[in-house]
Length: 126
Image (cartoon, rainbow, N blue to C red; front, side):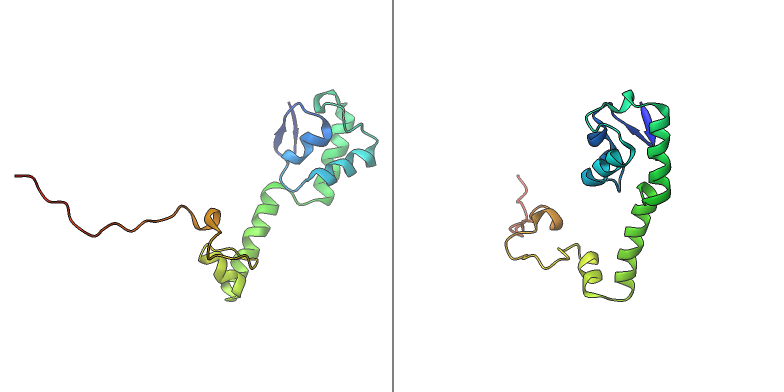
C-alpha cells in the first residue's frame, strides 16, 4: 500500500486513489497526474517511488489536507458561533446553514423524527 499524507491509499487508478486524501478531490487529482506526467489510469502501486515522492512533496507544499484542513474548518465554524453570526447559530441548532427549507425536509441534518407519546401511563395488571 502506498502512503501519502498519512493516508494508506487503495490499489486503484491514480486519479481515483488520490481523492481518498481529505482535501484532494477528483479534479485536483487529475491536475496532479497531468502536472507530473502520470497516467491517471495507472494503478497507484505501479507508480515509481520517485513519482510517489513528487506527489507527496507537491501535496505537502501546496495543499491543506487531512488534520490541518479539518482543524481549519472547525475553527471557522467556532468563529461563526463566537461572533453570533446567523450561520453560527444555525450550526449550533443543528439546522441547515445555507438557506434550505426546513418545514418538510432537512431530516438528515435534524435527525430522525421524534414522535410524542400519548402521555397516558400504562395501567398495572392485578
